[in-house]
Amino acid sequence: MDDTAIGLWGVPLAILAGAIRVSTPFIFVSLGETITERSGRINLGLEGTLVFGAMTAYAIAVVTGSPWLGVAGAMVVGAAFGLVHGFICRLPKVNDIAIGIAMMQFGLGLAFFLGKSYIQPAAPHLPSIPFGFWSGLPQVRAALDINVLFLAGAALAFALRWALANTRLGLTLRVVGDSTDAARAMGINPDRVRLVATAIGGAFAAVGGAYLSLYYPGAWNEGISSGQGLMAVALVIFARWNPVGCFLAALLFGGAGALGPALQSVGVTSGYYLFYAAPYALTLVIMIATSSPNRPVPGMPGALSLTK
Image (tube, rainbow, N blue to C red):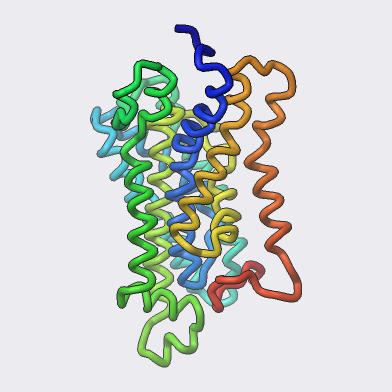
């Protein structure tokens, strides 16, 4: 059976497969940024954290032979990046945006410097679950070969949604994110909560990087991210700081990113490459649609300023 035996059905099938595969880094980075922004802080440095997490996971997997140790190592360095970012932002008269950009450049540069020797060696990949085992079509089996981290990200999105609404920790995070003064009046230390939230956000973003290097595309190189860490910030705004919304928006971004390859897979040879820009165009549209000088974005934490 050739690659186009299922005809035009290959387009939605390829988009489904792409939505699952491409969305996973978006899921983890956006969930991490949601936690950070729910505390009243924005972290634009997650692009650097994502790339450094990808390099760290790949290097540890090469050395140890265990991709899961690579994921764990990525989480540790991601949390460390978040702690550094959070600690600096606690200082007076420090701009969150500027520090985020500086941390992004630091993470990218450090990853490229330390990761040069790991471009060639092959690392073991993360496992996946063959949900398409029942089909005789290789395209269906490939589309439904789902990585464990995607399932973990989906479960985490729903768990975070529940925790934010129903637990004391969730209430604390929301109070700090909505009003620094109210949090202090309740005996909560906002700086400490934001420091922890930024560290957790960094750890989640690094897991997204580990997925990139250890599963899809499954190799370490300096162009592995393609700006996914920055696009995830727009995704969080689009999802209105809702973890389940982040999961669904990540699937939308993933599907948009799969349009070009899907059209190419069914023989479209002219203009399909324009669809590779779909995720970036979608990011631009979202940022324009959610920007207004006269009204806050619905759902935005009260203490969060995208311009401070």
